[in-house]
Every structure is written in structure tokens, then in C-alpha cells.
Image 1 (cartoon, one colour):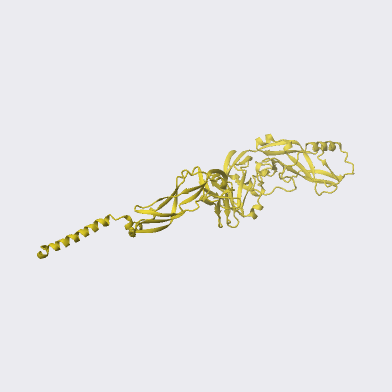
Image 2 (tube, helix red, strand yellow; image 1 turned 180 degrees about the horizontal axis):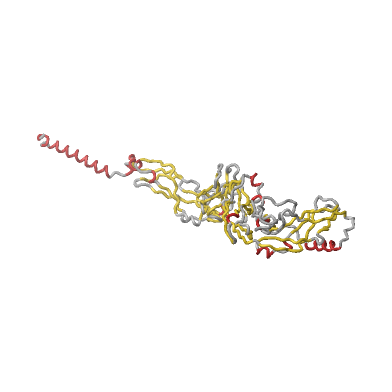
Length: 495
């Protein structure tokens, strides 16, 4: 080795080789780009989404872009192209200066470091913008499907109530016909509740209008699902008895009607509902409030409300006699003329009983006595009289005694009976006899039954039993409800 190192020619060759290596190294780092293009690659990125920036949504409505993505071709070192995430490549369109109508705008892009853009397809988009308009529409509801068999839908309750505002471009807003939510039913038998029902805008053909901004976007809805129902008057009936010395003065429920639920066949025959008050709960005169349970009759599922409060006022029994109560004739067949011959003045005196305050207000024109001659032929007949009295007023009458009048029926061509008092009284009866009430009558030839007897020769009148009563609100009640102590006969109450 020392021999070679001491050789001058060898040293010169070694120095030349080292110089060539150094020159190559320096010139390799400073070579022009054009000389290193063989080390760069290209890459195509598909479906790069276009981002929208600067758009004033409070002022404008924008139709969808004619394209929503682009294709990018980029160049760079393989290391940069292969190890950059695709979301590092971004494309956007700036709408901060957009105007109503069509706008052709260039796209902007963002690339990773070391990567350059070769091409962008497309490099611009068309943007159609319109001024934003708002209009209010009533919120409607569409139900699909059916409830359980025999059940029906009630009135939907929507919260919040009122209207929904629809915001769209003016050209689209004019197409909106309604704002509607949809409820799907599938044999439901209980109230349907939906807390978040989405609202949609529809045109007149029932097609949904896309991109409509609806406020509120959601509502809650409740749809009652019940058996068929109807509202009927609430009437008052009675069971049990008052103490002998007491009579009813006033009965009033806190409800005048109730809602009954059931099958249609049962509802069709129901015209009223009777709440039954047990009078045996009352021990002394005065006013008491009784709570009465409303029990559904056969074929009825339920009653609302389920209970009512009934205020019952009772008083000590009293009596009063009214003179000159006129008798009215009814029911004479065609071609016959009816004349009352006995009593000659065609009036009666009646003794009645009841609460003192009711008796003090009683007048002759509130009492009806009717002689019904229907189905009678010409001749003289003893006709049982029918008496109608106001509610809670009873007629005092000896047991077994019937109120009767003698009536003569004659052909219209036959001269009238020339009994002057009868003619005068007949005229008076025609002028003063009140119209008959719708109340039940007394004196039809039947003795009172099922009533306890008291001392004396007459039949005492108990408080009403359920089989003997007419309901309060229907405008009638049995006279027993207004009767009291010993020695009274049965009368018939009327309104």
C-alpha cells in the first residue's frame, strides 16, 4: 500500500475520481425541475362534494345546484398523493354576492401541501336563487287505517294549535295547498297520542313539496277513540221513602245531561238516563246534598260523569183547597158534541198537599182536570177525570174514591140541553180551563196499591218507589213524592 501511495500517477488518478464524484453530487441537487419530472405522479379524485359558503338563508331560497360534486386531477410526489386523506381536497362556491335569478359562479378549491391541480371538472356551477317568502296555513290531520270494530274517532286535539308557517321560494310557495300530518291507526281502541308528528307541505294534487321550511316542524296530537256516544237528559228517579211527615220541595242535580257510551243499537233506544235518589237517607226537613252513582244500563259501556250531586230539599207536609178548578172536555168524535151535565158548573174543588212554599205559589191555572171522551158513543156517560198537578204536589182523596163527571154526547144536529146553569158554566169552563200538562193523571178507576195504611179512613201516601216514579227532568213525578202524613190520598204531580 505504501508503494501505491508513494506513486505519483496513482495519486493523480485518485484525486480525479474524487473530484468527479463531488461534481456529480453538487449538480444532482441543483438540477432543474424539468430534469426530475419523472419522479412526480398524477391522481384523479372523483366525487368531491361542493361546499356552499356565504349564503344568506334568511333572505334567499336556493334551488339545488345543477351539480353537487366535481372531479379533480392533481399532481405531486407519490408520497404526498398516497398519504393524504381525500377530505384534504375541498371545493366550494361563494354565494355571498349572489343575486335573485341564475348565477354562473366559479368554483374554489383547497389542496394539501406539495399537491397541485391539473384540472377541475366542472370548474363552475349555475346557482338559481329566489327571495324567501313565508305564508301561514292551517294545520290539518290525515288518519289512515281504522280503529277497533265498533269504535269511533273523536275530534283531534293538536298542540300547538293554530297555523304553521311555510317558507319557500315565491314560485314554490304559490303551489302549497295545505300543511298536514298523518296518523296511522291499526285497530286502536284507546285514545291515540303522538308527541312528535312531522308536518309536510302538499300541493292541490296531494304531492309533497320538497325543501319547504315549516315552523313548527312537529306537533303533538291526541285523537279520542271511543265507543259511539250520545248526550241524553239526566232525569231523577226515587227509591226509599221519606219520613211520613216530610214531602219533597225541590230536587236539583248539578248536571242536566250525561254522555253515555255504548253500541249503536243500545244508544238508539236510549232517550234519557235516570239517576236514582234514595230518599231513605233523609231523616229531617231541610236541604241535603246526596252523591248518586250513575250505573250504566244494559248495553251501555260507561257514563260520564260517573257520579252526580243531587240537592234535595224537604219540608213538613201542608194542605190547601182550591175552588173552581175547571174541567176540560177532550176527544169527542167527529159529529158529536160533548156537554158536562154534572157538576153543573163544570168545576171541582180540590184539596192538595205538599211543601208550604209550593202550595203558596199554586194557582188554578196550574192544575188541569180533563174528561176524556175518546171512543165514547152518543149518550150519557160517567167519565173518570184525569188530574195533572205541578211537581211535588199531591191530591188528597179518600181511598177508593174516583173523581168523575157526567158527560152527555149528542149529535151535532140535536139541540143542546136547555140547562141554564150548565150553559153558563160551560162557557166559563171553555174560557178558563188550562191546557192539560204532560203529567200523569189520577182518578182513572184504579185504587192505589202497594201503599202502607195509616189510621183513619183514607190511604196514606208514601214517598215514591222506583216503579211508581217519573223522572224530575222529564217534567213529571209521581204525586207520592209530595205526600206526607196520615189521611192523604194519592195525587199526581206535574210540571
